[in-house]
Image 1 (cartoon, protein in one colour):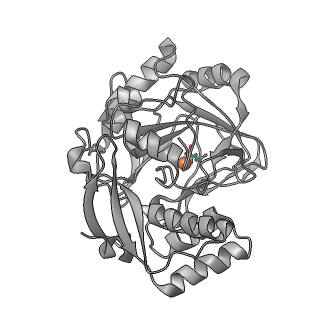
Image 2 (tube, protein in one colour):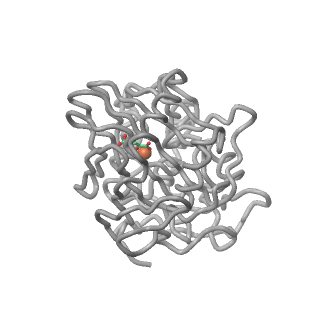
Length: 334
Ligand SMILES: O=C(O)CCC(=O)C(=O)O
Ligand SMILES: [Fe+2]
């Protein structure tokens, strides 16, 4: 067990070993100090959003999903006028990955300067080891970028996020972009890209969520977020039970942005400037289901022009969307 992101709560777990049949979560008791409970209660009472409190705790090396569940429990008790939880709390943690067939050792990404995919060689521009972040050149051709934009443009709708404490979908003031999802392999171009990206990310095509295209107009940005799902609401728990946790992300830039729009990792002081066809890959869920909070990231404000990206998220198992529509969105998002 190494890495600064392995936090005190993780070490305090008293695992009860109660793996629920058919679900990929495990009930675990966590212990927390009275000071921490008071601080969360005061922050909520002062009107701070749950997501801001989670981010503040994650910045101090707390596990994001445990923080979110603790905050949600305190918020529920405040709301219902019940005594606040103190001392310990039982939370749902993702099930250990050793029981999940497709989980691979981390990092999953290939070595060497050039990565061979189904139909295109991709050059590595730079890599970070922990967390694994890789910047890639020319994952898509200029023609493929343009074609994706034109297919996506008529289907864009305002981007939504899921409120981490309620699980309800809402249009977020933090995420001032528009987006759409392609279904997996829904047309020949998308099918070719799904296969290429799956080879690059070293995960089966069927583990991928459908490609998501986002458009940021001038002035737009996305707030710092995690791509893994917080297992603290019923919708995310159901999604994790169906398909496992998200493990890795590939963000491909579809145009050259005139100003701003870097993908930034505030915990790492690291940023990637958008360039048409290039991409940034990162992973955040290792073979033991530890989620890496250092992968907190954001789309910096676009200061001139517009920004288009296409994103692929990989799951631990075959991706099974919710219901027929399969609405899949970002962070804490299904
Ligand atoms: O727009 C970006 O640079 C980041 C996009 C992103 O975080 C995502 O699609 O999950
Ligand atoms: Fe993201």
